[in-house]
Length: 244
Image (cartoon, rainbow, N blue to C red; front, side, top):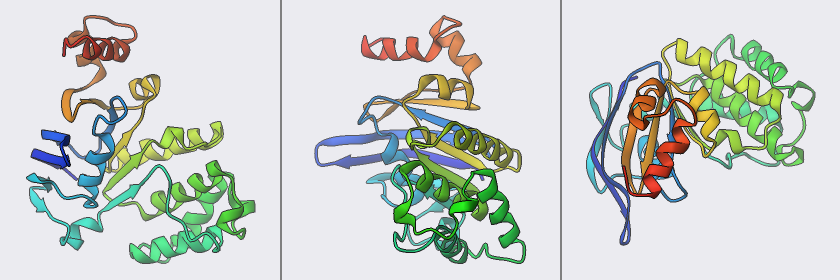
């Protein structure tokens, strides 16, 4: 799904979390959002998900203006916040089943698909345990299984690499995310980990004080920064020094 933001402004009292942001994202890309704390990354994700509405400007999906009442478009999006929502007393498998029912993704092959994902994320032995008995990383992996099984057109994730997942879970997440982009899914995630963003992105979006200061491939960003190593560190140094 193609995504476009046109002069999106979002303020919280006197703070401009997004300052007339414009950008275009093509289908099948993995986009990392980078920026200091409070830069506007989470607000951008919330506006894309329809959780927050822009004060000015518009968001478009496949050239259709996105509003909070456009449930047909919202059903094509899946947002996974840094602290996933779960029904804590219900089992892992029940939580996943509820998500798939909500997204009408509980067809004939849903059971086999979920079982395969639970196995891939080392969650199959925990499938019948209540969610509140899991560790933080295990709960996040359960939320990932639901997201991957629902397989919406747009995946939105806030800090997935700071979720407490073990290395096996991170590897499974990367494999399934890359496979999804190959199917044309658009994946947008925020992170503070520069090395992850550099290796696991088709394009990197650097946000600073609500503005997009860079949005391009790593090859293009290397040219912009004038260095070949530690490119993102150099860009952040330039931002700190005001040379954006």
